[in-house]
Length: 374
Image: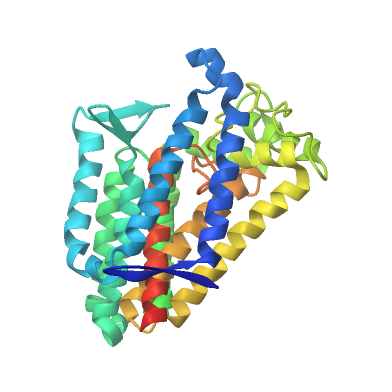
């Protein structure tokens, strides 16, 4: 379902309600839940319980402008911009780890500080990778089945991103970038022998990288049994599960949650889904999952119905990356995956994540609108 708005001298914009409705609902819910989850922490650290609320509301308003703006930009223009976007995103990742502009938080340098502006380049790089893969795959066509032409160039670009991300270090993002590339090449028609051969070769490398850092190995072991260390490494998983258990069917009510009161780490970002589970219960959790399901199903439909190969791959890549973020964040919050610091799209606090995801939805909306016009 879509609603077209015509303006003099401007090509009609088709508002895809299958995308717009869940995005608006999640962003609105996010503002409320960020305030609820962060109020006590903000009051203690910054002297005002509205600190994160005001920033998230500002990000949301800018995000709406970004979504509308990107929905007007013809998606085919990214064919021309693909290599500049790759270069800029790689340059930003280099700046994070190898210049004085990188900002360290919790022993990881993942933010870039440019004056008063602080953002996370990995979010930009993920979208740039999607655009590059969509462009390259659509250009190569049947040559995707050739190892040297259809597989190696994509693998080399992924390798550059992986090396820059490991320098931060951000092993979780390396896994996400790798899974995204693998899925897109699989859907695009790359030979399974190429995909699985490299996968099997890289598994030992991934295991070696994971075991080189004590905190990564500890996360994996605690994931298997968080109650082995309930007061330290298993603390966040246990309290996240307690939040879901306390919520029951309808929750304890917005603002009345207990686990956000300095028990859950980062309750307004990584563990906001746990706050939803405690304060809104199974009803709220189900509503959030349904909103994401509607959004992702619409993304899949746009990808399937788009006749232009670049648009189809781009829509598919955006859908995959949003879906992976949702599944990983929810999986961590529910103790189904090892701990990984990752925001829940549109719901968690975070300017970079919200703005990039809003831009991605604008691009998706333009793809769907173009297909409807063509």
